[in-house]
Length: 419
Image 1 (spheres, rainbow, N blue to C red):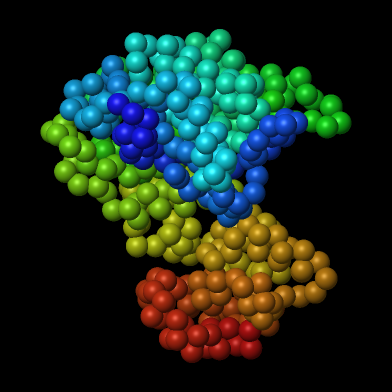
Image 2: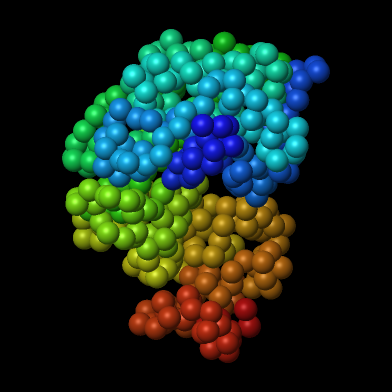
């Protein structure tokens, strides 16, 4: 099989892995080398700051000795198989970079022979790119669960990110659909990476020009959503444990996609894509807004509302927490107001040191006033009217659908006086 055909097969086989963003890394290009991890950008990924990067996203091979039921490349699947050599992956990466197609490499693989044998091939790709060719672009390697500490230690200084996919949120899910994998083996690999990241930070502590030398972009993972009956509560509980226990930079959520000749235990269709989106929103609230996962989903409501974002859903369910005085509330309280993001909350805190804020100030900050106003109080506003607004059974309809914008704005004076 020629390289062009291998590329077609193995690029298509890699499309199910969502965890390929290249944020969080800075690496100097060696003198006489090529590539870098910065700048604008075959797979497009977006960093948290909105920067677009292009990655060559492929599998080293789609042969696999595992029989994960949700995976199109499982051993019992009859898909076309292909395998690159180390030299072929290196040459493709260099050639695509020189043509300005890509800025980095995302390399995963099926398991051939054993996790260690597979990982050794991936590490050799990274070594050849960095050492033999002076490649300074982004490299993300996917780590098979259960690889040795030695191989992780060899990979870390060569790459920008390592990740091992947890895939499913519960032990029962893995036992049912991926019997060769265990949460213990997956989290053991994560623990090794965290330990070596911490050791690297300790070695560079106090240095004037301190730079992370061991996977500077950290580690990430992916969970498949909708392949099992696992609830959003279970998914977010697992994500929270991985964030706190292993210091992950990101958990990616990937809606299950039906595969050919699927196992009867798998659903026949994908979950609504909005569910994946809501999980990302909830994940963001937990990481940056001070929410606990148990505040967003619990035993009574184990799944996120698909019609409205989780912050608005929480606000509507906890109307007694509001209204929040925009001039007096602390940062933690303001972060819970629908329509107020982290950046605007920080701007509000900075502005109110100098003067009392009014509604017009929020408009200038481009706050989503239609959504936030019912939950805010201002100096000189009508508190009684605000409370009546919060108690209204129609509040959800008024703050969410765009078609209600005109109705809402016409009632601003009634609920807030001269705001």
